[in-house]
Length: 468
Image (cartoon, rainbow, N blue to C red; front, side, top):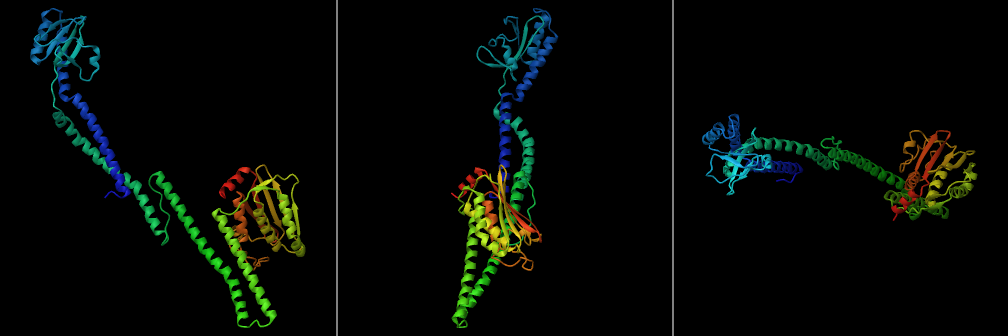
């Protein structure tokens, strides 16, 4: 029955309220048991007697005080005693009763002052000093009140009236609080059930702060899931598209060899070369996809070690020197002599700058220049790979690091090279080094890729722990 959160919250509040009312009832009942209405009425009667006698007091041994005490004792059925300043009994209207000593003043601080006589019997009393130094004490035996009578006459009516109304209002309030907390959560449950099937609108933020935080996190998760699903569909479509062309070529030329269409040795050699090249292209794409998957999962091998960036860039320039000379492009390194040592994975950074320089060479016309410029601050090192090539269109810059994205082939320098995974891998490697990469480009003027890498050893230690 009480399986839902709303029902359990309501039951919890109901039990809490019932417990609070029960504790209050017990405390009130204990108070009434110690100070029942009959005690309070009796004390009021004793104080009335006391006031009447004091108003008629006279000489200590005069008839007026003594007569007043006797009459009051008989009229109100009380016992009246008079003590001198030393606590010696001067008069007792009922001397046949066991003696009562003058109580200590501390007893007067009690809600219901009581005193015991010589036999241990309890008396309710009031005590008042007179002008002549004597003390007047008015007493009566403490009435016996059964606990059942207290509960029936005093506690039960209050509980039935005030407690019942309070309990009813509290339960209504508890129901409202339970709905306030549970309804937004049920909205999240309903939205999560519909998310895999159809379009789900963002859940409105309601309820306590923690529930609103949960709702915001849920809405953000929905956005991430949809983006992930979109990326996944896009990824599958792009991979299928990229594999289709080489597979078609491989299948066609293999068929030509099988059915004898490529009959001459030269034609067979040409078919074999096409098959080999397309297979190599597919192999490179598979390796790139594997690299990206490992970088995404954080399982790629990132071997951090001290690295001389100047030597790394010089080796990149040397590797591309022949290709740059053949293309008529000037390839230079601009680096200060006192460059600090960077803690990084040399092989991975070589992969980054190789990819950037290779792209720059493909998109820089004859007579152009590619510059690898290095500068550092106290916290990071910045490497700029700049070219004087065709540039990147403004609308393409936000997508340049997306997987399989390639610039419009109709533009200058837009020829297809690879599967469009190189810059995506570059971005992931730089991110794995806790760095960032940005791009600035103007069509017809050139492009600059800026790689910023932290110099702190702390960043390297973080990456080392990531791969353990």
